[in-house]
Length: 460
Image (cartoon, rainbow, N blue to C red):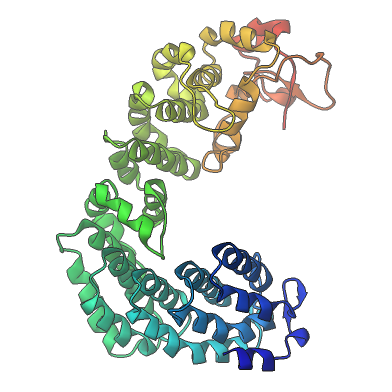
């Protein structure tokens, strides 16, 4: 392998750092036995050959056969083998996304030559390598008929639970890549049969695998999906190569199967569960649904309020956070929120935001006068954590569209500014909790009663 490596004129090839002359040394280091050196070399290779994606450089095409050989070598550290397969996976996926002008002409021939060697990895003694290979074969552009036979054969002999999940997903993707050949029909029938298997995670994988060819299947089998994602065995997905995420990630991944508003899935997740990660994930999913579909708030509101007395501070914080984003629509639950004004339970985040801070913002958003004493206290404090804490609510990726786009400006109550600065009239439009800039609506009682205690807040 190394003779061929030296025969390549790497200096004439391009990578994300310019000339690819450093690539051969990094490939050699990936074959070493020092774990620290191997990890460093794998990271540098990722930076040189992929970085942030957007194109497939000529050095990636030249390096591909060496990456696959490293992955196939039992003498290479397992962590290094997996690292180079992760790089191959990213390159393969990116090659299917980028425009033709950003794809090196040598990539497709190099990949087609590599496919037989990747297929051999499906039988590697290490289950992790088999998972990675299945994921790559699912993500690549190779026609289905070229890989389905090997995937089916491996499915029939595979005993590792996580690898079986990766194989199901790969089978579904490969069966949809034309030309898929006559075996595609057999594969789709196999996947349909798996919908009734006793293993709930295999059923979940089968729905994901079949959804591209049957978009209405997730809605028809929502009960199956909920049973799977709420089952303790959902942790198995953390060990897969295709998904490799925690409970919240599996919730999100599965929710994306629904192409239309489907509050029933979020409501099912919000049902009581002994696992705090499940309850946190359910609220994250509810927030994601509300950010996309304002109409779901009526159905979700009671379930969100029910989490206000959860034993976990993170759950209480998120529940109050969501009610704050709903603002006046959540006023019916103001009494339950007000109870949390003395809740010192803190999140495990760096800023250690408290449940009380989220409750305070929620009451302000509801124009509830019970927030005034706490707002005055926060404004008078030498360093209020309220402003920075509540900013995380507004800027949260799953929620950022709610206050700005879904709620009337006349009822929007932004978090108070941090104290300790002289109040001065900012340039441009100004507002306070409950006021609308540029005459969009009348000032609310909350804003007028706070008076000079609150500093002006610039409207954005």
